[in-house]
Length: 271
Image (cartoon, rainbow, N blue to C red; front, side, top):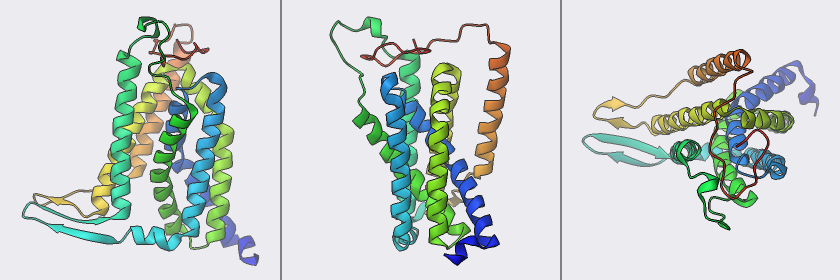
């Protein structure tokens, strides 16, 4: 316990907590958009369940650090004339998670812009209705990907497991506090929803590229590189800054209307 109160440990704790919050931004975006499928009264519950699952996944992985480290070791090699790779468990999870985010974000954009309007459905139908269990399942799948990436970052920063666990719990509590306001803000501004979905496409592409890079994939003598996360977060921050300025300049204008989720009652701020 004495090691937890040294200057080095406190600095590591604060730094790691900040990094966990930054790495959890994409998770909050996905959770907010996924929870938007539910009725207003169920959205907060779904967000809290999603963030609690994120915390549980991270703590379980921290308790099994040897398993996480083993995921970064190649388990098979492919050496063809035009394609070589050394696949690891971590790279396959990132690759699958990236493809899932690409599919999910693209399908959400299609639904919001070109989906069937509620008024076009036949009376009594519940097509497109989402339940808490389905939304939480989607959140859990995404949390697995984000949790492994988050824990590997933590392991690279410090080897003190108690500090990593405290940082994970503290970061999730902070995200739970801000998840509600973020979710409401996203729901009330359709352009923010579109930006959020665009961010998920960027993150999905980054995960696919990172999975290929960790697998040392070489296609036609061209090695697949990785996308620096600093570039990604700068693009996100710049896009949000521009949109915030646009919102301030157009407060009196009526926002664009996105398609609702069929079978659900109309919600304030959502048509």
